[in-house]
Length: 183
Image (cartoon, rainbow, N blue to C red):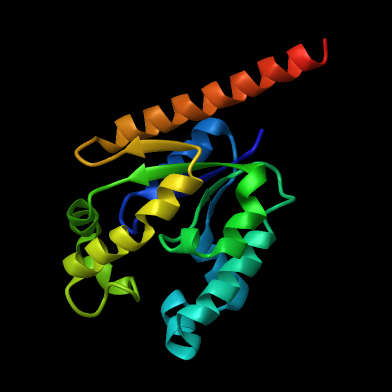
């Protein structure tokens, strides 16, 4: 079994989907941003305010590194985690990375007023910023992902069912291949 890492734009539902997925897989769920806030005893917004995005990415990398040797869990990093090559490298080979794809305008709509808690989206036009984030990160999401699940216009319950189906199938395939190699 490997970790399951859910990646995608802010607002795609990584945390809400991850919580349910963790329960269904009987694995601990880790919201990486919450873990960072606990570890550093301050908010993500405060880390950004004091040290900017570079300070946050260092904190994100250290927190990610701490997950490498833990029991398999479901991890929901922030939307920009995928741009942090060092953080991604820590989990790349001990995880299944699943890209939850969403249209930028749908992500903004899903966040509603909660968008103001997002340091990269709280200023300016959230729609334009989200579209720019999507264009800047799309290749990284797609190239790093082991699996992609479309979420635009899809009910959350259907997304959860699809992710669960993919993870369980991958684990069955791994077990079958392992048994063949050891027969």
